[in-house]
Length: 349
Figure (cartoon, rainbow, N blue to C red):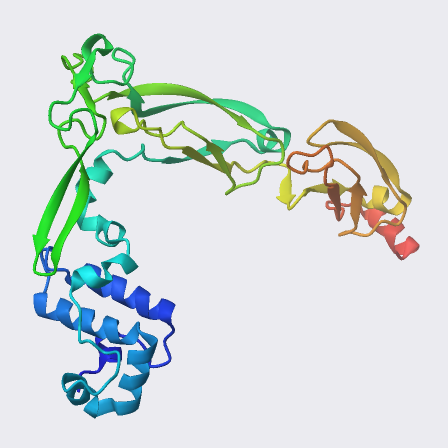
């Protein structure tokens, strides 16, 4: 007995959606009109699908097992009229969709939109925190300005004589399963319905040319390394006046010689003397935004972190900011004189 479940590569518990999905995949793969198509295999797939997609036939198949084919051939099953041809169940599927990859294939791709462009952009730490506008120059396809993207000299077009301006051609294909109609993109006009009276001299009728293009990119305050900015329509120009792709700019931030970033906070290490740590002090320090006076409490220990509210990184598209975290580093005195050492011994601290 033929194992219809095995033929479709599904479990015996498969539902109708899974059966239909498996059939679509295998029918597409083994269709006789494809280069590697297999008539016999396609017939088996068709046969398996007709049984398993029908609730009554599937129940009979599951019940009778090895005697199913014998009983079927003798007409032992009510309501079972044998296997139908392709045309009987074609209505259950959109076959133009099922076989679109090899019926349309190349033609559809030739009229595709422009490709996206991906690039990296390095900026300074301060620019990332505060935001900046950068101008970049890239080499990409742009629509030909001479012919306005038509491919025709003086932008003059005429109706395609092959498809009569329809942009597509309909044809009927005959197979052992019957006939069905397909609609393919006209190769002469590439689906446009019009062709140039005379090809553009600048782009040779290709509708686009490669050129250096300058673009301004607005980088928002608070952006972080690895985040990407999308510029719609700034990628490669599409062929035959199709829409352009997008430009994706991934940000890389150069390190700062004083500050480090930790999420929305900015880290800063402040060296102070033993005396300042012991007695306290007020010290002017830099922030990414300005300079401020930082109060050092008396008896401050090395490693203590002092917080400056709102002196950190802005939240994207917000007026709120993180904080600046100042880590105290107490410097141990060096090159002490004998007198200084004696004083420290007397103090015993």
